[in-house]
Image 1 (cartoon, rainbow, N blue to C red):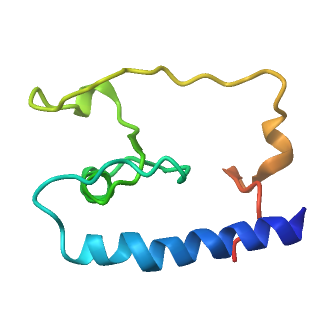
Image 2 (tube, rainbow, N blue to C red):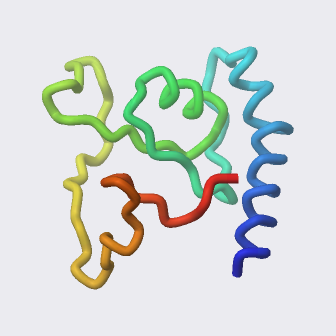
Length: 103
């Protein structure tokens, strides 16, 4: 499982270098179609969200309702849920969730 995890991380990094990074450096005027093969990204940064959106990366903006401007187009508002069957304590290190080691 760890070998597969490393290979998937390498594959994701190569996709990022080949496809996403050039689009982030020279943004387009219109967003690309979303690449359905990518898992996407959760972020709380408007700049990161906009850059990834225009690069065709599936992206979810995580924000408190108080920080959402009236000009923002919200397709679906989703509340955070915490499944009971997941034991979060087993992934915590000093109060921070880290399910996998950083590479």
